[in-house]
Length: 580
Image (tube, rainbow, N blue to C red; front, side, top):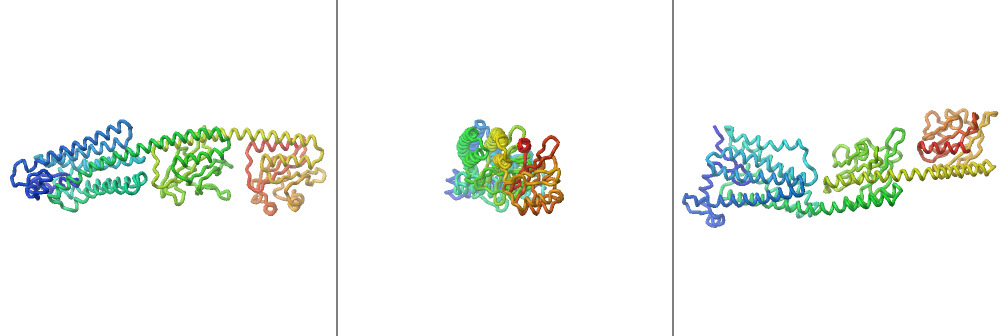
């Protein structure tokens, strides 16, 4: 037994009118109140001639022409700007226009089933395409594989050809629910977007109209609407469709103006950073200026920080350089490394811009809705990263993301150049320090004055806090303190008395350069740990002083904090020890 019920009528909530609804519509038109019939241009006399339906052709023709004009406008704007959102919206409204035409065919055709199939398929497909266009419009296009879900309504619409023991309205319910769901999602997206662009009032107006449109689709399954309200429903729903089509075009024009302003801002930011790269040679000054320009570009006052990558013994760490009201989870505290899921570390590892919402894997910034990490790549590695927090309503278009990556590349190149200039400056300062130390040693005969000159050169170049010279007596097998600066007598006595009995005797003996990262936690030397903790020293660098094959003593540099020595630092220290 074929389904005898009708797909909900000619208003937007249904798949059109079959033969039964057509007779009901014609019968009820004759019973319309005189005022309503006159308003619709319908004869309310009881005659059964063609005059009873003379409003239908005009209604469908004028509505179709209006929708087609809007479709042409969408496609023209898509052709001019090549915006995927305009193309998807244009195709979506084209499918809706097809659905509108099939409603007329379903009413007037002798066999309504093919028309009903197209009407149901177009109902769900048009909603999906409009949702996809809206997602693309806000900068979050659907993945390519997601478009397969748009084929569900055409496939389900085949039920109109299957004999079912239930009303066709129940059989077609999934299509109405599907269409209503995507329309509600579209309304939610439009609310969030227009609230950020035009304020809460504009957001409520557009999203509420779209929500009513979705509610009419789903509500027709629950409420049986009879004419004359069916005729009024046709006018209301299709009037809403025309209004929404106009509203989306207006929204796209507003967005085009915003994009033009943002493009100008992006160009200004690029120009400003290019100028800053030439003005500032210090990485700190450069990144501080970059945060200021990025804040202006992203329209945020704070919530940004810049880090430089540092490698220490195979571990990758981040050193904060500049900040604007931001204390992220990856901010180093007490020498701790960033957490494994740190957004900034992901951007460095992948070499691309990372943007995450709160609640997703890897979003480690507590209390923030959107996390953004911009890598700063150079030629063969990433030198740093900029982390930012954006408000939830702040969307990033594809153009903005490309601009941010370009800014990151410019900053990476500028940082590399600044690093080269800084390295050259360090070399010049070290050569000057070596020259000064050599001059003092040549001109001076007093050991204390010579060692004071060496300690001064080390302090100015390496940031040494304390220094000591331990002389080795080959005959007495003991060491003596030849010079000390900044060390207590108790600590010096401890070193002299225990140098050859401590497990850590390499601190004052041997012919190789020795670096102790943290003497307060030196493994196997509890006595040395206690003495270092009492003295307040951490990193220790021991430089042997040799003459031919003979060990004369050791020059020891002390740091009050943990200090890493790179290859260039060690070369300088070796040259300084050779001068001594």
